[in-house]
Amino acid sequence: MATVTAFIRVSTKKSSDVNVRFRLRDGRTMQLFYKSEITVKPSDWDSSSQAIKAKVLFDNQKRAEFNKSINDRKALVIELYNAQPIKDTLTSEWLEDAIDRKLNPIKYKSEEPEEEQPQKVIEFVDNFVSTAHLRKDKQTGRFLSPNTKKQYVTTAKHLKEFAAINKKKDFEFFEIDHKFYTNFVEYLQREIQAVDEKGELIFNEDKTPKLSKQNFSQNSVGKYIRALKVMLNEATRNGINTQKAYNEFHVFNEDVDNVYLDEKELLVLKNADLKSTPHLERVRDWFLLLAWTGCRFSDLEKISRTDIKDGFITFRQQKTNTKVTIPLHPVVLEILEKYNFEMPNSITNQKFNDYIKDAAKVAKIESEEVITKTIGGVLKSITMPKYDLITSHTGRRSFCTNMYKRGLPTLMIMSISGHKTEKSFLKYIKVRQEEHAEMMAAKWKEFYK
Image (tube, rainbow, N blue to C red):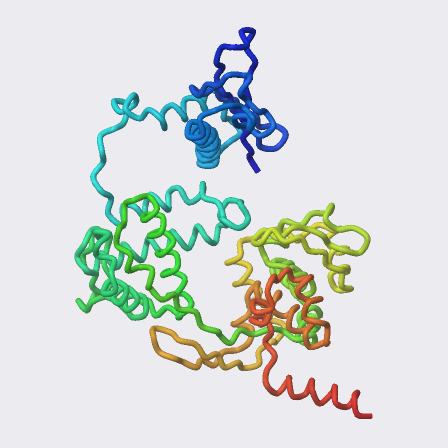
């Protein structure tokens, strides 16, 4: 954390005033100096309190004004420093110039570019997306994940399509009101008439309007609304947007019927003969690592040999910056030995999700599952074979659920999975009502022998 100290250099002429200087420090390597126009007699200066000495005869009002000017200048130094996204290259010359520009803006008015016309929404969103790779997560301080950046890109795409079907090239910020929200959500939830890049309608060969299937789930709609609100917040902070209706835009969030693989199914998957399809074998092995460590896909691919020591895997999770230590399950150890303690070859999450479905299908993990969720604004129940519902995240969900069913304490499982709150952890527990009843019956048999 950066700190600022005020100090003086004593003049050879003890009666003459000297300038108050400021030193900014941030860690061991960053140190900036600034010589201010504020002056004081060395005999009046208290270096310990960085103010006028308490016992010096001094006009009380002038004393208060002087001490306030010192504190205000410290605050300004911190403000200017914290506003800089990249601090490694900052110098004392930069600090002096930045403070002078802040205190004497008229001197630099001629350097300012002519005021630009107010931006419109899509124009601003495009700029936001183009600089997303420079943005950092507020909690971790690290650059945004690829998934977050992808959400911004996709949200911008839908916003442009929504404008096109409304015969608009862009929206004014004052138009982003409750009516806009209602229509945009409806657009995300239904089939719409397809348009090209120019906003012209697209027709099939039989001259019927071509439809672009939306029918997004509630959670997908919520994801795009959330991303839009983030961008509108940025526009508001920048003074571009004054329309505050977006603060009341509801972000949809729905608990869905996700599946997990129990320990028997994981064993079936492990024993499946996939030697004729090496790519499926590697994906199967990777999935088993997820299912017996509780890792996220994004973390597992970054684990190296140096993270594995004395029967444990220790690393910091990318998403939350939480440090976790995971014991090596026998299945994990077997797979690591198979790959000489190196992670299986990395592939994209999308390819992984496609391949793991194929691997599970070969393993005949095909029980029928009924999934109920809101699609296109309508609550629907869909019956699908289980292998079609498996993704990389099913592995992490399987770990949490299986350990819970084993009777391990919730806090113990959370310490391995890296969940920070019990509320977020419990979303991963996919135990059916019948399974809860069976678990309680088994416990009763232990208690009441």
